[in-house]
Image (cartoon, rainbow, N blue to C red; front, side, top):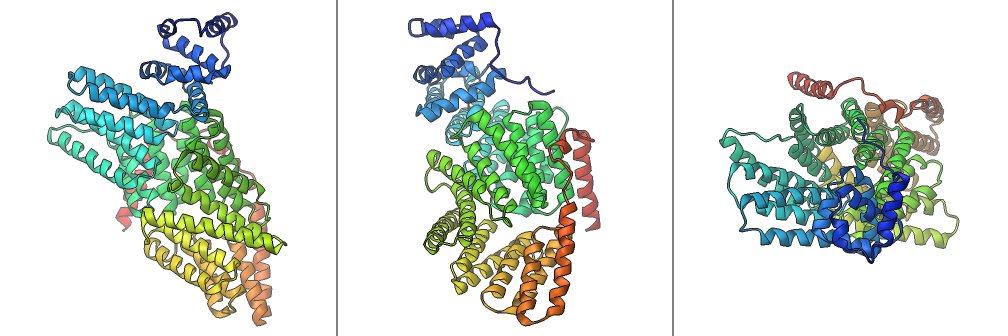
Length: 586
């Protein structure tokens, strides 16, 4: 059942009483307010927020005991995010203050009995969970590390279970903060505790842990491994598992299926995840927005670009309503919307909206995180792609050169960040080489462009195989270079035909990317005087246009997930059965 919609609509008399308490706040004893039940206490603090009295609110929230109590007002969590983000935007470092306070408390109680430590761990899980949900990953990491330290002080079975739970949470925040090497260490530590439990005949559910490992491997572009672990995570989904865990496993499994081009499986998984999140958490909850971003990712990859833009916009609206402006979750939503808008408007050349969202993403990330943080790589890449297209359509040479140079600087920065994080032999690094190849073509540096495209193709082919979508993109870009700028028509023709074959195989006759290959071949055959082929591909392009007009013309992607024809158990079993049948065929 969906959570009750969170709005500030208390009874008039109650509201008057809260206002009276707030009006006398400066004279009232803070101790009296802190003795109130958590829901009432929160309402007093929320009224302080509404009146803009952030210094007073900050002095309250920076005290661990106060904030821990406020966190118990679970039905106010949406409003608490408003208050918390406002304090962070105001310059009150409440996240780091709370994390430091909790860490110090854990060091003080190291010699206390197990019950005291258990209570602290419970507080840490709630505090760290809130900080993680709010996007303050470094502070959440500090909290969970302190919890883990407490778990290791007792080498007994209950503490092993706690340590596994702590590792799952720690792995999640390290994934979110792009600390993948530390994330791998965290997973190994969790496994060691799992092994201890197994030796004593005990089992901890592994769904959340395997789901987080899938997310880590996906982020590192280790797609085969991510797919393998998503299957293991799906096997661990059982009755009674928290809905949040189920939703997150379905999301990660869907993304792993997308990059393996298992689109039917991905569709079933992500649609059920969206449905579950909306039903259980409500349509204004951050978890629902998480599922929408992954739904948008699926739609973009199956070439339903228009609907992906709409879904990404909905996800951004939710995140902005919950977190406000300068929040990392809002930044990632801006970036996703920027890229989908860029793809959607590619043929029209209207990139104002895409550029706005790309710049918002970069502005937020640079405000929050260090300038060399890996999260900037993709945002800078998206902005560079947009600037390049704007430059190409610009009639002022000076402006064109300035935009191309800015795009070049952004691409180089993104490439260096990717190489530092992932190394040379990685899909993300290959994407950046391919982007530089396109840019060098626009800058009329054709040899450099060819070198970048070939490098991108070689890496992608070795990692993804000969017939992957990413390979087709790079092959098509190299064909364009040979066709339009280097007069290597024979090579260009072969590459265009290869790109077309991959596109049709993966997405069908109406795939959007085919337009550029078809137009490229029309130009090529015109150049070499093969007018029979020119006529043939004009007809093919006309048929393609008719297909595009019919494709995705009716379906509303959100309406499509308003109900689910299957239960969670049926979705899981369907997925696992399909894996078994494929294994038998192999």
